[in-house]
Each structure stands twice: as structure tokens, then as C-alpha cells.
Image 1 (spheres, rainbow, N blue to C red):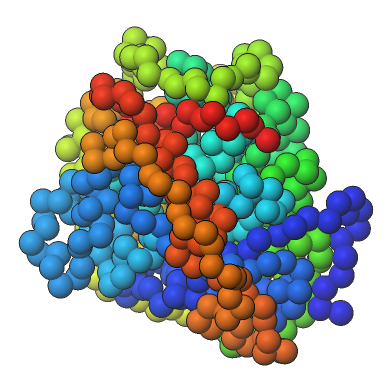
Image 2 (cartoon, rainbow, N blue to C red; image 1 turned 180 degrees about the vertical axis):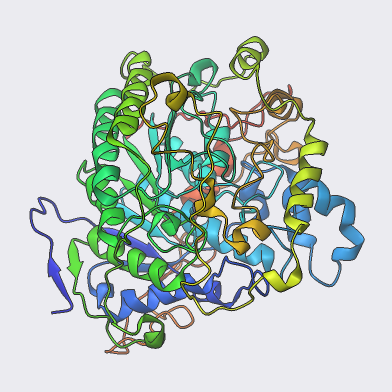
Length: 588
Ligand SMILES: [Zn+2]
């Protein structure tokens, strides 16, 4: 059996799965750990396991520039759409300004790549909102580090923020959960001042990219206590992860009562990730999907980090199966990437014997504080769909961050670039070998800033912060390892700069103010021709694939509508944090 029904499934879910075969053709450049091919490898497993029988497969309409500017600045999106490897020398100043060129390189088709990633998440959200499905899956999405006017951590366009904005048109409260090994800083920042989105991120913290996501960072203004952070140490096991994830999410569901959930499923939290330092097995990771799914809310499943391709594809294929209500069998089916899965050709990703620096005492203490933060919300907020957080918050922000991050942004940027250059070319393996050899260096560093350890002593000797776990060579080169804390000044909670960034620039593009779009023409008939290569490698060779073409699809309609609805009549400068769209549509 290639798959079996899940035990205890109480409700069959309608699953929409988004895939665009073009995604596999983009390359960040030689030696870069981010490899879009992983999405295609995952798709190959999904198809060859026969999951196409259990869900609808779509190729989303790529997001347009205009759609991207619902969150990103016009100038930044314009820059992304123009920059190419051949003209980049004429955009040196802009590359610096938008943080493009190092971790986030210019490559052929960059904008198309962003459009595909964002299009899938937006359309997934639109279909969820219109009750066209119960779970939408977009593994090309989940790029949680991208900021309003800045690329970061391999992310250029924040498909998650765009997807959540779409959901907010119909849902009063949206819960965002992030299980990537890195802090979900871009999403947190976007919704830091609102109670309409609660962000909950579980991530390695301490000498680790992006340096944000402290336990004490909980949101500001109306958003106070609506951002939760669970900082972790190296090597967390399945059991320990579950021991904090489930009770926290359970409490979040009871306290916040969201009507839709977005789960960022970054797989760099898996054991053996090239840049990660945690020790989750595939099943430990997937347990988060299972648990979140069990609340039976509209669910948007997104990708994210994940740098050991064979394991990324395994986990996301398995999680696609869980979404569709089946457990994939343990033997990898023959597929075009079969040789990557040797020597065992098994689906499972196992934990290693690395030490878990998260002691029960540490985890309990953090859990208690997170729960306490949650209690401060005072239960389900009575949000109005028209609520928009627009007040200045200087005093509160200063108070929160009085003791850190005093460097001006330019210095910090400089430091980061410098850090990433301190490397002999010879150190950087350009191999795509997916090998285990370079992935970890278990050196450990004490984390002097650790409030938990210093206050209760519970983890002092055992924990130590563990920055070493992320210090692979490629991590250092690409800024995902140690030594670059506080360099991502864009992240909301940790820097004074947030004030400036958050309130200095208008978030609404001038060109779009007050325009009302006419509804798109009626949808053309759905075609049944597959996207390029979507059916590739399937046993049957015949796969029904829905095309989401042009303006015709319902998802696209919803997205078009959202552009019109999101436009605010205010001409005053507004924060870079996202204003939840006002909507006259009744929440579903
Ligand atoms: Zn990550």
C-alpha cells in the first residue's frame, strides 16, 4: 500500500494543492543553500504516491506587482521586477537599500519566482475564504523573512503576509503558526500592532538568524500579547517539541478562537538540515500539522526553510498526505529523483543522537511565560472588521527595547555584510551533494543574554545557547548562522529602528488610492490540461489538474476583489505594519 487512511479522521477534508512546475527551474546561484528544486522533488513524491487522487491540484495565477504592493512598497516591488543578473550593475545603490545581493541574490527569473510563490499562497487563502476547500497547500510559499521594503533570509516577497491579508477580508481573527527553525520575523512585524492576527513562532534563539523572536517580544498597541515567541535551544527532540507545541497551541485556540489558521511548515527544523540545529524527525515535524489540522479550521499550509532537499521533500510529501487524510507508506515510490533517497529509499526522516539542550525545566519555564502572555490578552478580542491600528507607540517601543540594538541600521548592515565576507572562497562547498558531512558543528556557546537561564538557573549548564548548531559554513556565508544577531533591523520587536521603519513610510501605494476596480469578466471554463510537468512521473500518466488561468478563477476573482477592497481612503502616512483590510463582507 502506498498510502492508508489516517486513524481517527473524523472529517474528510477538501484539499487544494498548489504547484507550478516552473518553480523547479529557478536557481539562487552556485553554492546557495536555498534550492527551489526541492519543491519539485516534493511534488514528484506527491504524484507518485498517488496523492492526486485525494486532492485538487492547481497552478495558481502568479501574483502581480499590484497584488504584492498590498504589503510591499511600490518602489521595492518595482525594483524586484526590474533587476536581472545582466543589469544589476546599474542598481548597486538599490541592491544595498533593499538588501538584495548577498543572502538574497539576484538571479534569472527572480520576480517570476516571487510571483509563483505569492500567487499560490494568495490563491490558497482566497479558496479557503470562499469555502472552496478546507486545507490549501503551497509548498512554494512560507517565505517568512521578507519585509515591506527589504529582502531577507532568502525571502523577497512575503507570500504569508499577502495570504493572511486575503484571509482577513473574511475572517475576524487569523492565527499564524511558524515551525521553521528561524523566527518568523517578517510576518510578526507585519502584524505586530494588531489583534486580528496572532503570530506564534517556535524557533531556535540565541546567536542565530535573524536574531529576533525573544520570549519578551509580544506585540504592541492593540497587538500587545498577540505575538508569541517560543525560543528554543539546539537539538530539540520530537517529544520535547510536542510537550510545548501542543499545550501552547491548544491554549491559543481556546483563548484566541481564530476562524482560520496559517501554518508555516519550514523543514529546516528537521534533524539533519544543512542550516538548522534542531532534531525533529519527519513524524515529529508532521505532528504539528496533524495537531493543527485537528481543530478543523480553514488551514493554509505553507513551506518555508529547508535545506537538505531529500528531507524537505519527504516531510512535505508526508504532510500533504496528512492534509489529504492518508498516511504515506514507508517505501519511496519510483520517481524522477529516486536516487536522492538512497541508500534506504525510505520516506522517514529520523532524529539523530545529538544532545537536546532544551531541558524540561527550561521548556516548562518558557511555556509558563508564553501561557502567561496569552492570559494577558484577556480572551477572545471583540474585534471589528474595520479596526485598524494606527496610533503612534514610541514610548512603549522604547520601553520594550531600551537595552539593546543601539547600532544604527547602516552600521548593522555593514556588519552583516562584513560577516558574510569573512570567508575564504575555498571554505564554501558548492556541492549539491546533500551530504551530511558539513551540516553541523556542535560547538556550543554560552548565551549571555538569556533571561531564562540567568533568572532561574534551570538550564544554565545544560543549555548554553548553542549557537554552534547553525554555524555550518554555508550558514555563515549566508547569514543564517551565528554572529549576525540584530542585523535584521527590520524585525519589529527587537530594534529601535522599528519605530522609524514602522511609521515613517506610507504602506498604501499612491497609485492605487481610491481606485475601485470593476469586477473581472466571467470565468472561462476550467481547463483540464496540466501545468507543465505537473503530471510528470506519475504511474498513470493521467492527472487531472485544474488551471487557474488569468482572471477567470474564483480564487483570482477573490484576489482581484481584495485589491479593490483593501484600498483605504486615508492619505495620511501609515505604518509599515499591515493594516488589516476593512471589509463590509460578513465573516464566514
Ligand atoms: Zn528557516
